Amino acid sequence: MSLGISAPGGRQSQALRAADQAESGWTLTERTHSSNVTRMKPNPYAADLGGRDPLEALEDTPQEIRRLVDSWPAERFEKSYAPGKWSARRVLVHLAQTDLALGTRVRFALSQDGYAAQAFSQDDWIGIDDGVDAKTALEAYLAVRRLNLAMFRNLGPAQRERAFTHPEYGTLNVWWVANQMAGHDLHHLEQLRRIE
Ligand code: NI
Image (tube, rainbow, N blue to C red; front, side, top):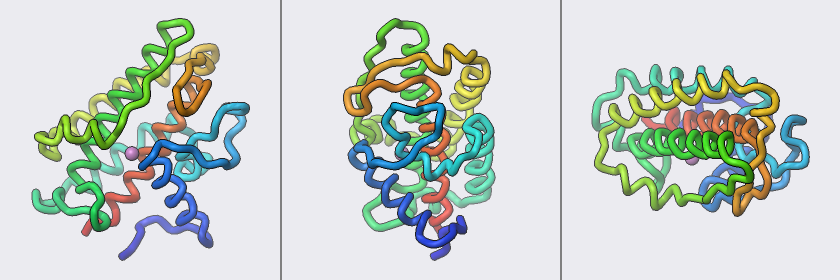
């Protein structure tokens, strides 16, 4: 099965394993991180983002996902990239939920001093919206992303550095979330590319 993304050596597979670990338990692995998040826990999807500008990736990846699945017949959305993993439809629901949750987290962080974010379980969340079809999930993801992208684009330097706390990640800032979201998209794009 083609992975769809070429990567030198074993770097990509290592990155995917680390991201899978982060995905399942929202735990963190130690790795280097970009300068704008120095002293913070590393973004678990940094390797997926690969040094790209997060704003550019946040704009492009949803469109890439849309183009990828545009011509899929309905039954393909029920297929998974690996045994026991989410179907394509659930991946799309998860992407929409993630933009809702993380976009909301950023808005709280921007508007409240000392904001303490709550963790959420992606496995508990997925069942909540499991009744939705793939097209609805995709449209929700694309629409909420447009809103979030406009928000991220509008942030000044102080807003990007606006800090909040997370029970597992510790002290983070708003721009860390932008990088997290951008890498997270690419992580799931890679999964969708593996569905035949
Ligand atoms: Ni995810």
